[in-house]
Image (cartoon, rainbow, N blue to C red; front, side):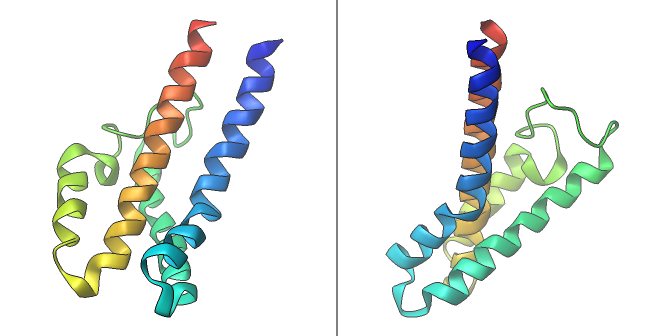
Length: 115
C-alpha cells in the first residue's frame, strides 16, 4: 500500500518540479525578466521529444537520464557549458533543472522498486 502512495507522490513531485519550480528559479535568478525566463524554462520541456526515439516511447520504470539522447551525460555537459554564455543562460538553467528533476525521479523509482 505504501508503494502506491509513494508513486502518486512521485508523480506530483515530478510534474510540480517540471512546471512550478522553474517559476521560482526564474524569480530568484532572473528577477528583472522572471516571467519570460519562466516561459523559456517551461519551453525546455521540449527536450523530452527525445522520448519519441525510444521503444517503447513510454516505459514507467525507465530512467531518462543516460537513456535518451538529450538526457545523456554528454548532452548534460553541453548544458553546463551553455551557462558560460549569458544569452543561453536561461535555457541552460531550464535544461539542467529538467535533468535534475528527471534524476530525482529515477531515485524515487529505484527506492519504490526496493519496497
